[in-house]
Length: 258
Image (cartoon, rainbow, N blue to C red; front, side, top):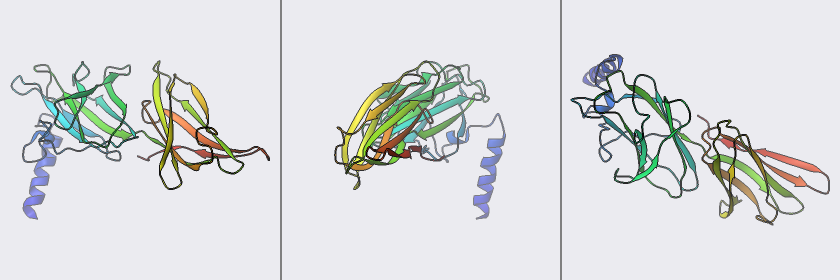
């Protein structure tokens, strides 16, 4: 136990030294310099991690991360420059397959050069990699960044198209940046079995009303909404209407909490 505490103290001391080796680059910890060797896993509720991309010996530093997206869900990775980290060029932040041999997605610059993002909807349950890469000569121990992983799926617990009720889905994009984004609404019956989906595009600050009476006639159940608008990028609700009385029953869709 004593040696374990000494080791932890040593690692914390390295973290506190701005010019020390990045903790995650130490081979006796979780060496994150290769796609197959990294043990550093990102997940939705984890706090942001701080890393550097110091170029040691003129070699560009690479930091690799493991992620496990699920089919029918949506995700976002945010890489925020908190020093002089040059990770905002093309290829600086990428999403790869599980062994790092195939590029699945290039990151986007949403305005400021100190923030890069990856946003996508997953079609399969898979294990993938995120790579953050610096330059071969410009990055220093102060070239630091934070990285966070978000599940951005919205969950809507109730719709009802059975009996005399009919439901509509209302979706609004909350982003004001001049970027369209895509969404797919997936609908399930009360036993969790997939029924159908609906897809479309949302413009900035735009909204859509999707009638469900034909698509889900006779069904009641729940929905989730995968999208590329980012965490908090859309708001939605399901509204069940009772035409004979004029009553409506609103069900807000919500994100997984952080």
